[in-house]
Length: 461
Ligand code: 4AD
Ligand code: MG
Image (cartoon, rainbow, N blue to C red):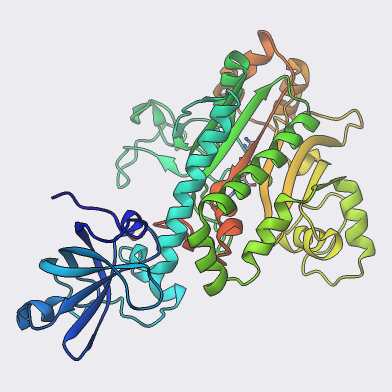
């Protein structure tokens, strides 16, 4: 007999003999009947198993405790109890795996998020993490669907790289050199020629540079993969390993880039509202009472677009008492971004034309000589959710900026070549996948929207 998933059983008409397999959430008994709530991860909802206590061995029923894995055959019957249309009248139960109640850490009571992080190997079995992980899957699927429907090519960019895209020097080294006896050059520096790749390599911070090469051949591409930042940021919005979606489009100016970013993010939120109802309702009840109304308001709102300079003016005139002082030229902190979005405009904001000093080398320089065509999308509760720009397509200006910043030309010759051979205006952006998930799930900490978070001093699991 084939197993049926709970999500399908709950929609099936009563009468059939069925087989279900899953993990016990709760067991309770009255008189001669035992009720088991069984979950198999296919939905947030459990199926109720009803056992006639007289029919089953006491020793078998004793093994059915929270966390145990069981297989149940029986008749799908109309449920007499409230809360579910159908239940299973058990005929045959097999215990596939027990879970000793004295040591199984996930008991009925609600656990703190901090505690659940310590048992990240088991937390997917909770309602909250089940919901978050199903939504995470749905968003990944919707991302591919959005771009596929628009004719974008999914380009796989390398994880191991020898260039620092964002130029922030926050890279994890990749090496097979023996740490206890590193080969040195005469001047004392590390001899990377003896390393695996014959040069210094790192984990990528962004797939953009290779993405641009793709756009200059295929037109519209996107990447979607893990990226790594060795920044020592212990905040609820930073991970050392996070996933990023980076579309890159030939012939797009900054305005086209903003249009796409706004359409993309609204599409994803709408997709979640339409396809993840049970999980969103659960999170709305348990985690954040304003979640669904916030999601609906964003899909129905035109994002504000304003320049960095205008944003700074608003912050200066706000009279607010910021921890980090405001002035033209500062890199905006989360408190500044959230002031603009949550207090001033009360809607998402796309900020453009940032000072070139605080942005990466590849951004298109404006005529004023001071600013670049950057665009950051700022969201309520999150701050920056997307960072992007129009790219500098002029060979001369790009090389000049690389020289100004003292960057190593020899690692970038292939990137610069795109400006030498058939250069074209182009733009792109990066959406932080976990920042999106923070917004869509209402979870408060980025460590709780990825199965196994990587943060400073933490790489367990
Ligand atoms: O603004 P960032 O650094 O931009 C880039 O990497 C560009 N190369 C993207 C592009 O234009 N193709 O990062 C983009 C987004 C941020 O807006 C944020 O959502 C997310 O990536 N992000 C992080 N998410 C979690 N943890 C971190 N440490 C993050 N750093 C950036
Ligand atoms: Mg950024």
